[in-house]
Image (tube, rainbow, N blue to C red; front, side):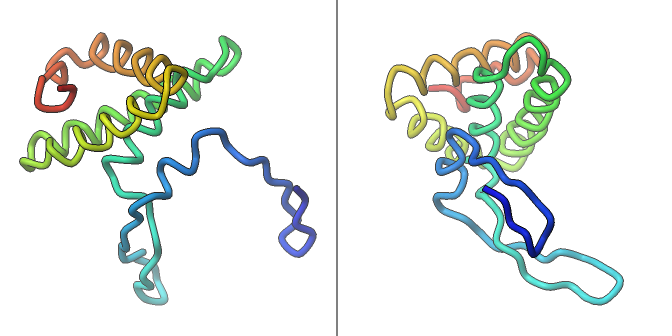
Length: 126
């Protein structure tokens, strides 16, 4: 879809609706102030990144590595701040959406825990 006013061509991303459920607000800090913006819930965004990892082909390795690192940073934050239940709820929601979702999420989880063994915590993945 081309948006002429912005000079952009946008492509809908698979599985994006998952991260857009349960949005929250955050302040965006800038020189001219701090407007409130809508952002995905951090746990849902982290799980979305795991799903997207499972969707990427070999040519997208740099993006796939970034997906894993972003998810790992958010998973670690959830554990450190006693918010593992939020991450776990998002994880189980993704797994409950069907075989394809579960397969992609599992691929992401395996890569994340291989790169970050300390995140192989049952509080996140039960």
